[in-house]
Image (cartoon, rainbow, N blue to C red; front, side, top):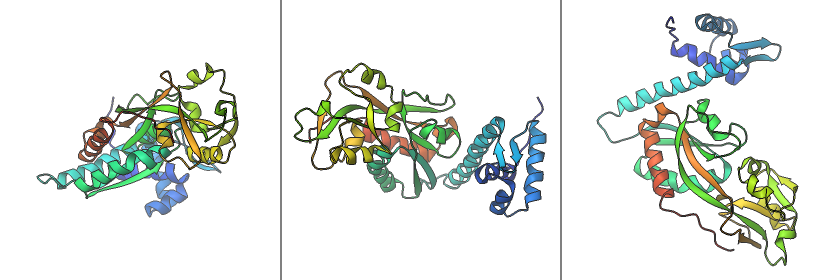
Length: 300
């Protein structure tokens, strides 16, 4: 197979066209002309021997091959940034540069803050950005696979498997519990309040075996909205421990017993980023924060 050389600017062009959805917008972003961007993409397609974008009045959309190429381009460009940062830091203990993290809502709110606080104390030069991603479909792992994040806090064992090209490890296994208005004589008789991200959990198999759990009659945007609705007396909910870190007054958490379902949470990254100093530092802090802890539920 003949080797193909793609320059960093060509990779940036692919990413810009995909992100902006067209050649004209990509040209503005790159400080080039529309014709120059179009010519560059045709040149890249010629080198690779495959069509990367569908053109039309809608703009430019990546083909399946194009989406794959763009994901690789993002990851290669990110490694070039790492090359500069880590080369300049050789011989020093100072870690510096950006670190992009994708996390679902409850992890971003309750798991990451103490971890990032410790990371900042040890390595103030690392600039962390956290993007909250709904854990539906590709979810946080998809952000990493597509090159948009360096590390993702992901749920394991769901209907959306982790892409095989990623690596990672389990951080914690948290139990589900019943949350309901305090003082209700029979909380299991209440309507079920749920949210879409919860539906992807493999614990649905457990739920299906419980004849007391009705079909959800109220659906919310996220777990925070679920707690608000339960607090307003609209029903009860079955939620994982992280989502129950801060429960509004007037609610009670009831343990579901020894056979209760759990949710497995871990981190994912790419093999190349796993070897970088900033990702290694974050993983150390994540493990230090989660490994000694055993998931517990306390009644509220």
